[in-house]
Each structure stands twice: as C-alpha cells, then as structure tokens.
Length: 373
Image (cartoon, rainbow, N blue to C red; front, side):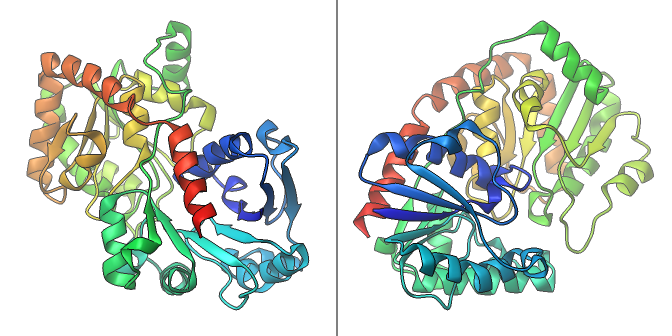
C-alpha cells in the first residue's frame, strides 16, 4: 500500500502532535514490508535519521510561497495536486484536516481533540474556520478518524455525528527518552539555563484558555508565601483568546521573583526539565488526553491535573475537581507541596502505570486501523 502522510507538523515547533507522528513513523516501516510511505512537507524536509528509512520518501509540496504561508491554503490548494501526482492508496491527515475537494484517495484524519468546535470562543475567527469548519468536514468525508482518548472519541461522535465504528481510539505513550534516571550535571545545567530555584512546579505546553494557566498563576500567588523555596516555571506559546497577558499577570501579582515565563524551549531539554521539577501541572476543561502528563510521570515527576484528565494518569496524581477555581487549585497545589510521603508513592505508581503503554502498541493499532479501511 502506498500511504501518503501530512508530515508538516514535524517542521513546526514539535508539540504533542509532532511527537505522536514521529514515534509512529519510527515504527511503521518495521511492522510490514508491504507499505511505502510518502511524507509531505510544506517548506523543507527535516534532517532526522528516521526519515532516511528506505520505505520512506520525503517530498516538499510544490507551489508559490504566498500559498505556503498559510497551512490551510497549502493543504486545500497545493496538497491535492501532489496527491494526484503520486497515485496514493491512502492519505493520513495527521493534523486535524484534509483536502476537502480531492476525492481520489481514501483518507484517515487524526483529530486529537475538537476544542475549536466545542469551544470556538477560545480561538480566533481564522482558526475557527481553518480548524473548526475544515476539521468537521474532513472527519465527515474521511474513511476513518483517529483520536487519543475515550472523551475525545465521544466528542467527535456527538459534535460531528461520526459513527463510533469509524473512530479509532489509541492510548498514547511516553517516549523511551523519558526516565527517572538522574544526571546531577544535566540537572545543574538545566537549572542554570532557566534560572531555576531548587524547588519548582512546571507548567508546560501551548497555552490555551482551556488549560487554565491564568488560574494556576493566581493560585500559586495565593500559596507562594507559605512555600518560599518553591517557584513556578511556565513554558509555552501564548495562544489564549481573548488574550491573557502572562507577563502582565505575573507582574500585577508581584510574583516576578517566583514565577518564570518562557514561550519556548529546546526539545532536547524536555526530559531534564521534567526530572528537575517537583511537580508537573496541567489542567483542562476540554482535553481528554495530554501526552505531557505521561511524559512527566515516566520521568519520575508526579502530576497535578484536573478531573477530566484523571483517566489518562490512572488516578495517580493530585486531582483538581474544578480547574477554573483559583481557591481549589491553590488548595491542591499547597497539599501536594506539603505531602512528601504521598509524593513518593505517586512517583512509584506513576512509573508503574506508564509501563502498560508503548509506542509499539500505538503504532500497531493505528496501522491496523489504516489497513482495515
């Protein structure tokens, strides 16, 4: 089978979707010699070694630069021409949407969440169209939809009216590079690089309204005087809408000496950031899964999260029932920082919980679904 794959997310900042696709691409060519994979990039082919596998061909889609500057325009106008030239058996749309006006190939769409449809007010008008509208239409015409949690599968079924037999739910795993192994020199280097205190809570990931980072900052401000040796490190592109100024909020609360905000980090620093942190915090009112929770747990760092994400960690963390509540979030953070015995238990349970998940299984289940279409 000749399988085309939208691999453009690997060119961009390598967030959760890129890490999912990278892990599957490393494994798929080893599962069968019956498939050939054509990966499509928007501007350039990354230099990763796994892209050099003999079963993988990498192509930059052809077309004028003014169309390539917008993801959705390149996908809807330029990608169909490329797919037609390559005579594919199947196309895997890894980033929520697929070309709507080309029906010459079977399509599988990965819709990792549909918050842009369920909570459109959190997105700009452009994103409501380029993600919300196009994702719904892409899922409707696809031969199958892949997602990463039971909650998200239910959302796709409910809001997009997609039959459950058409949806494949996979349960993500943390990479093998995440482990609790401690390297004192690397930990010292990461602390110097980010100007970190000896103790800190890590909040990492793209910042959307649904992830309540503003609430986390307010909650930390309420309890930070009781924990003078603990800081808060926030890393992520600010994509809130309406816009929340992270820098201004930290300044207004007069906690600049305790809270560090960066909008980027080197991906190679990620394992050491998890290991150096006392806790990783990520809450949501929309997401049914976030891979960062499993990455943190596998690194030996316990997590603080919301009720909606409790299932993805097997209950092995501190749970905030209402993540939009500043007071409740503050109480849970304070409890986590004070309970050293429970922290040790959560570390052990978190590492054990992650052993049931593997990228081999994720890749196999996804490829089996693709082949079944």
